[in-house]
Image 1: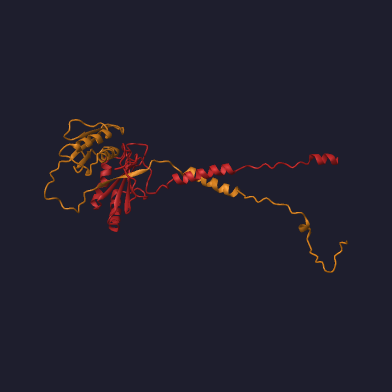
Image 2: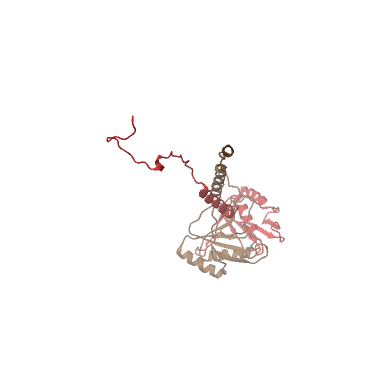
Length: 163
Length: 154
């Protein structure tokens, strides 16, 4: 048994590297770039996010000049709500519903008051509601009145001239 | 000497930082911000909107709309004068806004107008804007207010 190659054997040349025992390299995913990007995204969202209460819309219709004036007066008397600014603070206001001796104190009271009125004979949800205020009244109070009328399910709400 | 060298050779335990839990949390935070966040529109200038009790305002997306912003020049001063602006435009006099509304109305006959007024603005100032809206033949006007709890049922 000699190791000398015979004429029929094939000799495969192997380099030193091929002859060396192979080390198994661990397949690892390099997470560093992903972590960089993810942190950038996180910082972006943290810096730019601002928590705010969402806003919505209260719909209304304005009288336009294109419509023709009605020849016959509408026999329905509207509910006239007057809101007055009584001080500098947003809570300084006074409500009055024309023709009624009791006056609601808050806008929630006004909503309940209007609901009671609507259930009386002669009133329904189509009864016009007109909100009047002086020029210096805060917009918040007018929107409060409008919102109260919507809560009471009135459908024809409008702003009137200043009181 | 040879023996000492052999003793000092120890395979060092590799110090690796396990990043998996951190990545989990960071991803959760990103998903939270992506879901919760809505990108603020340039039309919606930051202001103190009316905040009625049990707000009946509805979250509606209107097409063919123009937004008129009425804001205090100095938000820290309740008695500050106000300025008008249309959408993301800079503040302009009411006459210019009137002309812009007329042009918008000509382009979009079903134009709807949203009034976004600071809650501390005075009625006279908001009414002036309402009057130019009505003068331009625009019938649908919407008032922006903060949303309250959503109405249930009916």
